[in-house]
Image 1 (tube, rainbow, N blue to C red):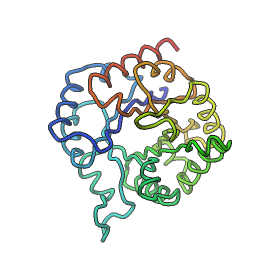
Image 2: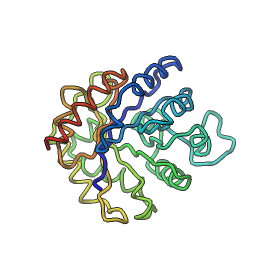
Image 3: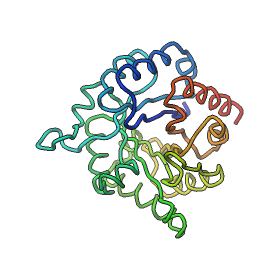
Amino acid sequence: MDQPFWIGTSWKMNKTLAQARNFTRTLRASTLLDSDERLQGFVIPPFTALETVCRELADESVMVGAQNMHWADAGAFTGEVSPTMVIDCGADIVELGHSERREYFNETDEAVNRKVKAALAHGLRPLICIGETATEKALGATEETVLRQAKIALSGVSAEQLGRCLLAYEPVWAIGDGGSPATPEYAQWIHRCLREALPRTADDQPLPVLYGGSVNEDNCADLAALPEVAGLFIGRAAWDADGYLRIVSKVANARLAA
């Protein structure tokens, strides 16, 4: 069976419990993701809503993830959350290495690698974020930057474990308020570079690489139709459940036509 096309969203530091429940109830009322095996949806809420969203979507096909975690199972790490705590909430995925974590919280490539190994050891699926800054892009270091981040994050990961990993290519200059999305040609180039440079899984499949960075209703179909893009990781355009489902619908049509 072909790998599913991943399509999900991280809410970052947004949504109260009531807002999270409203989102999940809209998803539960829709059959769009349940009826299409080509698509795998996922939602990554803040920690305060993680258990609630996991419970609300427990009987749905949509996976739920955490936005970060520590590599240790327990310890004197005030403010951190362990892999066992993430699992205890019912999550399947953990987002690691987002550019905001790297920029604002000094997260290094080596720290991301430790978290990736811890996630895999506990049966979680790491979603590893990589991407170059505007300065790195201007200096012609895009390829070197994303390959360095990916290779260090996956260092020591076996071919069997690799089958549980996801990469999300998110150019830093494209994300956030005021970001400009990469062109389909640019995204295709980077995704191809990653596919050619990174090892394959134990069943000889390429590592799925999602595109994220100002994905919206206008560009989602073009991005989803790219053969090198294995999914979309959406920001604010999918924070409204109806907006997320509209993007899912457009992606499904684009993948069918591709």
